[in-house]
Each structure stands twice: as structure tokens, then as C-alpha cells.
Image (cartoon, rainbow, N blue to C red; front, side):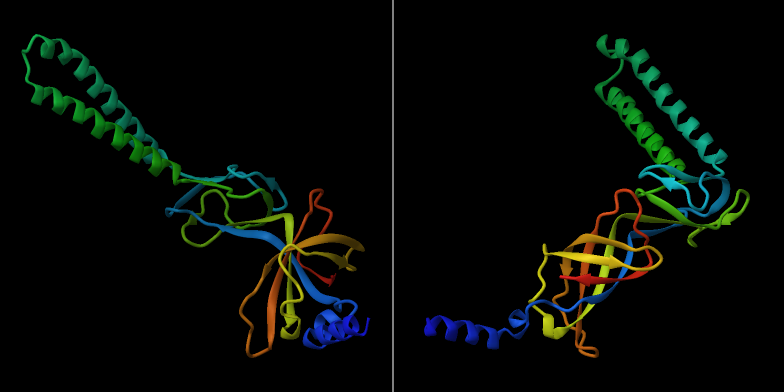
Length: 238
């Protein structure tokens, strides 16, 4: 029995954090999982903005469109070239079978179709760049642009993903090794609402900040009914 107690005492001395009955509560910050600032891939004038601040959006949903009359015309021209090249090949197919045109001429006709199809793809891609779509499910938290305004690299719509949320902790280095990825903690929010919920550790930093002797921990906090607010302080209890 004495041997077991000596082993436990020795283990506790070498691992002071584990010797404690429980870790202390840590201060944390609840934040959106993603916060995406949307700008335009190409500069231009806004034709329409389809969302307002506070609107819920889904991944792939159109947020805004730029004026694109010229680009639509380019798609039409490219499509006409493809159709013409295909008709031209059909007309010359019988001539090739009768050996009235060479294999080289037939190859040129087929290559002409391929080039026209590539030009059509390029024209469609350029047109698509003038449509801004959401890359996440979330809520619009900022909307600056309006129809008729010029936009470019500066963002004019911001969307936040708030399910799940993330909780960021800054923990003293003495607790390094005491908290591991996959562990479950209780997140307590007291203001502006009184909420307690479980979160899972998804990131434990491997590098300690020498200036503060701390390291970071990130937890994932489910928020399926969007009842938990983002941008608030919390307590995290392991």
C-alpha cells in the first residue's frame, strides 16, 4: 500500500497541474466561426445588392451583382462562334467522307470548335466574376455598397458564420499539457444572456508566447438555434 501512495505522490509532484482537483475557470471570448469580408474579383459598378444587414444567407447564395452588359454580349458572341463552327464541321463531314477535303482540313475544323468552346468558357467565367456569392452559411453583419456605386478590392459586405461558434482562450503556460484536443468544457455566458453550454477543444497551440508566457486554446461551440451570441466574454470550466 505504501508503494502505491509513494508512486501517486511522486506522479503528483512531477505533474503539479494534474495533482490539482480541477483546473481553474478561464476567461474566454466567443467569436464567429468565420467572418468573411466580400469584395469584387473585378472592379465595376454595382447593379444590385440582394441582401441587407441582419439577413440570413446560405453558401452559394448571390449577395450582389455588377453591371455586366458587355460580358453578357461576349458570352453571346462566343456561343455564336461555337454553333457556327459546329455547323461548318457538319457541312464538311460529307466532303471528307468523299475525300474532297483533306484530313488536315478536317482537323482544322475540329480545332476551330475546340478553340471556340474554350473562348465560351472564358467568357462565362468572366461574366461569373461579376456575381458575388456567399462562401458560407451565416448572417450579414455589414452592408456598405449600394446600386450605382463603384466597387473593387475594398469589401462592402461582411458575413459571419455563427453555427458553430468558437471560443478563444489564452492560458498560462503552466497548464500546457493539461488540456488536450477533444476534451469537453463548459462555457458560461453571463451577459447579455445567461447561458451555459458544452464546447469541444479543437486547437491547442504548440508555441508559447514568450512575452506573456501563455498559449492559445480554441473550442468549438455548437449554436444550432442561434441562441448564443458572438462577440461576448465567457468563462470556460474544464
